[in-house]
Structures are given as C-alpha cells and as structure tokens.
Amino acid sequence: MLAYLDHHATTPCDPAVVEAMAPWWSAQFANPASRLYRPALEAAAAVERAAATLRRCLAADAEAQVVFSSGATEANNLALKGLAEAALNTGSPRRRFVSVVTEHHAVLDVLRYLERHGFGLTLLPVDGQGRLDPTALAAALAPEAGGPVLAVSVMAANNEIGTIAPLAQLAPLVHGAGALLHVDAAQAVGHIPLEMDALGIDLLSLSAHKLYGPKGIGALVIGPGIRVAPQLHGGGQQQGLRAGTLPVPLIVGLAAALELAMADRERRALHLGALRDQLWSGLQALGGIKLNGPPPGPERLPHNLNVMAAGVDGTRLHQTLRRQIAISSGSACSQGSPSPVLAALGRTRAEAAATLRFGLGRGTTNAEIELAIEAVAAALAQQRG
Ligand SMILES: Cc1ncc(COP(=O)(O)O)c(C=O)c1O
Image 1 (tube, rainbow, N blue to C red):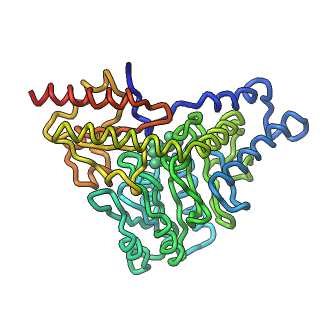
Image 2: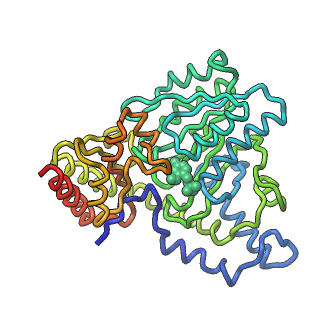
Image 3: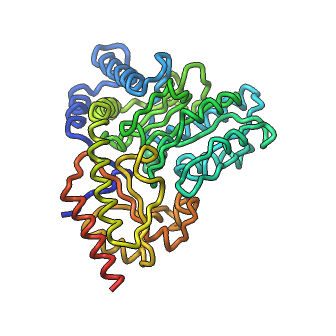
C-alpha cells in the first residue's frame, strides 16, 4: 500500500465533483460565449452561478469580479502583472511591490520578472518558524523604504511549512499606506476560515486541485473598483480580463469542490489536526526529528507537518520512504536547490534534503499515519544502524 500524504502537491478530485462536472462535457457542451441559443445561455448561467458560489464561499463583495484561470499560477500572474500594467497605464507613481521570501515561486518569479522590468521589490524576511513580523511590513511600506508601494502579496498559508499569515493584522497596514493586498490562497481556501471582505483582501488567487477539485482551473477574485490589465488577449471573454473559451466543466467542478470543502472544513480540520498530532508524536518519539515551521496550533495548517531528520542522508531517506509513502522533500524544485522556504528558516542543503513534508487529506486514515511512522522509523534505523 502506498499512503498518499502529499495533499499540498495536489488532492484527488472528489467523486461528487466529478459527478457535478459530468453533464458539462458532452451533453451540455455549448460555448457560453455563443449567446444566440439556449444551451449556450445555460452554459453561461452555469458559469455565473459558479462565480456567485466563489463570491459567497469566500465572503467577497457582491461586486467582486471572478476571473477564471488555469490555476493559482495564472491567477497570481494576472494579479501582479495586471496591477503593474494598470499602474503604468494610469501613470500611477506607485511602482513597488512588497512580498515575503517564503512565497511560492508562482508569486516570487512574477515579482522578479516585474523587477527586471523596472518595478521595485522589497522581500521581507521571516523568523525561524516562517512567520512574518507585521512591524517589518509597516517599515517596508514607508515610501522612504524605496518609493510608494502598489501592492503587497502575502500567501494565506505556506505550502511547505503550513504557516498561516496574520492577514487581519497586515491588511490595515497595507491599506494605511494606500497599497493593495493580494493573497495567494491556494493552500488555504477550503482548509481554514478565509473571509475576503472582512480580512481586507483586495485580490485573491485560488486553485481547484488543492481543494479536491479538478486540475487546470482556478480563479482570481478582484475586489470592486480595482484595475487589473488583462494578460491574455483574444476573444474578449470574462469582461476582456482573460480571453479564451471558458472551460465550463472545470468551472462547475471548481465551484462544486469549494462548496463541498466549505461544508466539511471544520470537521476535516479537527480530524486531520488530530491525525497530524498523532504523526508528530510518533515521529518525535523516534528521536533526532526537528519541526520546520510553527508548532501545531492556530498558526499552522491543521493538515500540515514538516520535519527534518537530523544527521541522515536525505536522498537515501526519500528513496527508502517512497515505496511506502508519497510525501515531498524540502528540495523539490526544478533546480534541485533547497526551497526558498527552508533556506529562509536557515536550513542547509543537506537539512533540506532530509526534510519530510506531510500533507494529510480528506481520505487519510489512522492506518496510513501508523504506516508513515513505521516507515520513517525503519528508514532511520537503516541509516543509523
Ligand atoms: C501557495 C501556492 N501558490 C500557487 C500554486 C500554484 O498553483 P497551480 O498549480 O494551480 O498553478 C501552488 C501549488 O503548489 C501553491 O501551493
């Protein structure tokens, strides 16, 4: 049996979501942009219903715009490049972004791209547990720190170490400086409470495959009155903000997955939090295991655990474990260098390689947790002799 404990990488599409999508592949296949006949109008109505579901589940403003995208990567690109281009178009003096060193590449690489094209970029450090200090953000927002800030991009929850950002504390600082708050919520939506309006989030990116929906669909939710320049030009779909024929089945799937995830979120968080704690105590008992990120509790995603096995060869460790458990390491990145997250926590390349990221999910069982503990125990014993 291979225990799948890599739910931060992706989640299985829930059978109920597959069922909700089913009619929209073949029976109701019309293009929602073909407005002259009934099946197309029905497809357009399904897309509108999905957008309304997103606004409701995210507690967004009734006027917020939902732009469907291929996932969170594209949503982040649209948010950040779109804001930058809109600032250029309107002659805004705001030409600087502020973000955090532990962001996902889908934010960091976009911001570095914009930096190469003349925008300022301030990346904030984190503490040893991956936490951002709001006073560091306040300092970075001062115009003297490099010019007026256009937007701050902070992830709601970290994809490696599960750190939850104190968005309620950050938003007033961002708005006080006249900037906008973009939140990459790919790992948070459907997992922790996230109310866009109440938290003061101006733009929010999400992805269906992280919340038991299909791959290849996500969205950027844009608060009312915020100008974002389109990054995909063509047929003028989605109010001209993202051209391309709308993938109706995937959009219906995203909305269905979100509704399901909201319905069992609290129960799932309690259940997975307990399983995660069981995993953590089991691993701690093996000795020489250190936690990466904040302690299990309110500052950490309930279904996340990230640990480092001291003094062992990470490559060998993962080679042994991969036969029994599907997890990720701390060096999973295209260049093979330690992830920016673990590097920011001060971990060396060897420590990052010996890092185990566990992401529990809706289907995770007690037996799988026990199997994971046993597998790590055996792999460590093999190396420690
Ligand atoms: C925090 C975060 N942002 C963005 C992404 C990219 O999402 P997608 O696969 O939908 O493009 C991921 C996926 O790993 C993520 O964890």
